[in-house]
Length: 307
Image (cartoon, rainbow, N blue to C red; front, side, top):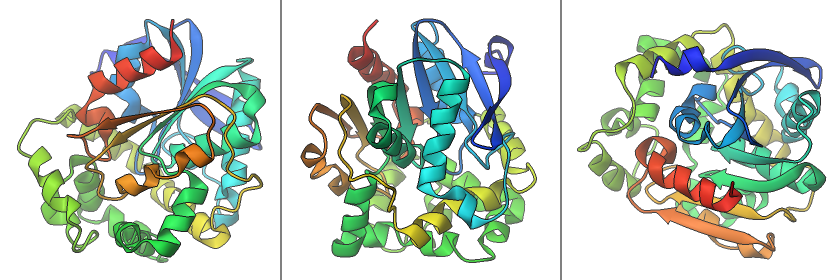
């Protein structure tokens, strides 16, 4: 995987008052990829390798992550601000209309860009990323999703960054590796833990080299605290971005069905908000569906966007 670093172009783009470290590779129709927590641009590695010969890929480190700027203060990580980061990034790169994909926290941001600025997008792709309004309603009304989201209350505690950094990032490594023994304390009593434990019995797509790159990203000063501010800001404003949840852009939703944090119930009701919707369910994949099933993800994206 180290050869990928020889092929990419790395730039720093000014947008919305900050600089975003951004990876560029490939040519063709523009496709921007937004990562989540505790990820960085490299989390898309298998997608990048699978799509770089078809599309112009734009892969930023989101605000607060890895080599991008990390402004202090929870107020700098609201959904509206994150949405405008991506709008500004696309304009700075003169992308014109582009397709946008988001995973995990990149999902709500991508949903928001499509909702607030539909004129920017050709197509929208969401990978295990909750629609903000559906997620808000589920947490309020559904005990299964509320239990699955219980880790958020650990993440928003003032000392949570120290917890995640201790013992050489043990908890963060467990999140990426789906190490169930370590995760049991964060996801108490979830039936999906049993399903995910089956994933440990087969080889997953994270190598020692990959984990070294994650540790480098997590070790950037202020990165973990900034990533946790996404959760703190969302609890504070309850996902109340200034749009009603309607999506006018053709949308592909890919969901790893063994996600311990986002139950399949987040797929229910999407048709109420999206006129053109396609859902692809990947049964034997965890939250990290790009790692567990990269071929399925890449083929689904290519079929959806086209040449």
